[in-house]
Length: 265
Length: 99
Image (cartoon, rainbow over all chains, first blue to last red; front, side, top):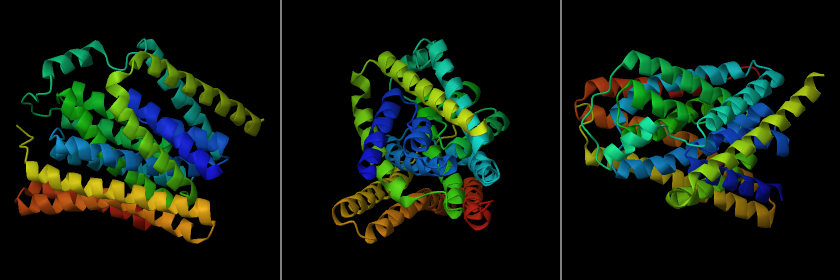
């Protein structure tokens, strides 16, 4: 029964993640912790497995379209995987309440960022770039590698800390600071997520923080949900879906916050 | 231009990811179906195999890209890939932390 529920929740998180382009990782950890009684550290590790599965599947599609910059991705992966592995190691020394508190903060931050942009996922600059690119990749040369690598280190650390893919950090860094076309930035970010998540997931697995009995049904659900979401995305009104995502994130933040207070007091 | 796009390179790396993702999906699905209808101890092993294959897929992807870069005599990116591979493997050797 729990298995079936895990598949269903994974499916919904994957669907919502793919429809908004934010990825389902942010929803998986709190859902596992709150509704399945999984200790937060195991919830993070388990969520990472689902993130790798989704990244591998969607990245293979981007590679077939030749929009991924493998060289750029590989270079930034030096930083993301280092940040992710070191953070995953450190997480072993964090106590449960600290992790839950960080997660509440992250959920609130993401919600408010989305609300402030009025439910639009991409800025006007993003939208203009999409129109200009129109399926063609303009010639480019990635710039400001030191900045890109530093930001990637932070993105990797966040991924290892929270069990998320970190696409919403990597895409703007490549697009705005490194001067990479948006289409390439999106594909390359997706490409990097699998390796970044694996760098920390391996550490979590070795520590015993990934339970295959939970990870497998969840990954199956997320995989199916994101496949469907990717197909539906062009036909769905994004703004409504983004507000739905914000509502779910605020609910999870509140629930996790109450849970946290119960622990601390 | 940095991104000299080699279709064959993309195809091979993409294939590794595709095989990994779909392979895991079906292994995990088999584990689920088995677990739901048979309730034995075997499914957990199947699911564990699926999780391990998933963890290994990005590592294999980096190793394959590393090999391809060296074969093209693109040493700079060959070493970059090797660096990523080392970080991934170090995690599996030292990454224990407190339990």
